[in-house]
Image: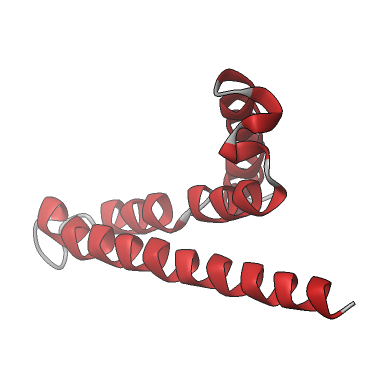
Length: 104
């Protein structure tokens, strides 16, 4: 199993456990994390592995394209944009699921 797959599975497992822990600590079944749609959205957005992979690639460049610290800044910006877009995606999927449930 290559590093990216292992990282992805590790992030998913860690975040799933963290979401369950947050749910238990913040009110159990009354917590916002106990709702399925909120837990799925948080898991999707929190399990992004783009930034660690981009930073690893920049590190391997060894300064060939400039200072590593400066090359990481666009990576951070791209990661933040991806989180925002995934939030919109999670909202779209939630609305689609809610509309299909009310149609039944």
